[in-house]
Image (cartoon, rainbow, N blue to C red; front, side, top):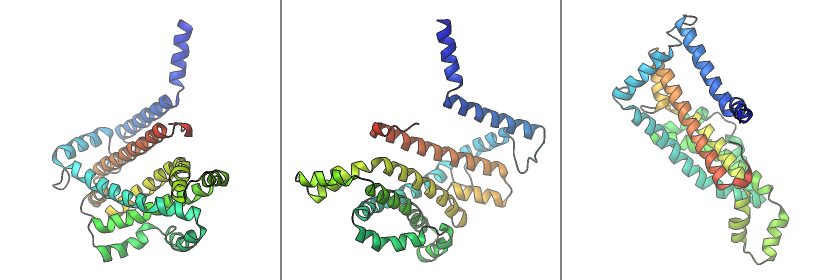
Length: 267
């Protein structure tokens, strides 16, 4: 009984989750000690206590006359709407391009042209065309998320065994049924990978877009605080953005594990 308990404790302390927790605690302790001992200037790196107090203050009073929840909602609304549009456009086009080389030949030049471009390089044009409000941000996020999703689907369709498709056709399945019941299910593991990649890139682009042209959102809050050297507000914004991004990614990973247990994804 004693040896079993010792083994369980040993497995717990060497587990990945425990190591992650210990690394977080170590960084927090190092942060607290370095600010307490004044190893770093508090103007640039505020103490954890100061950041916590600022967070509570913003939570109660908001930032620049807007509640914190509205800044979070503004960012997530832009991200969610743009992702939904990118998903609805990229998935069918990616499947068709992966299956029909003619369609891929038509779309590839345009996607490969804008895909390597930094999003902020053409964001100024979007602002000129669509204005400084949400329309230009959503268009920018759509373009940022479309390419990773599209390319993931094209590559995944190309990996579907041709024998599986031919067998379905020989058994009387229509072309539409092959797409719905054979090709699309086969691409699901790669689809989740594309979703995670696209959302990560879109999230980064969202913050940059809000910094350049915005009046609300977490990215704008961090940018505005930087103009007044409010490093405590900057830290609060960064921590909130990072926490939200981690929760989104954890949700996608859980959904993949739940829907695709055969993919054997390690959470």
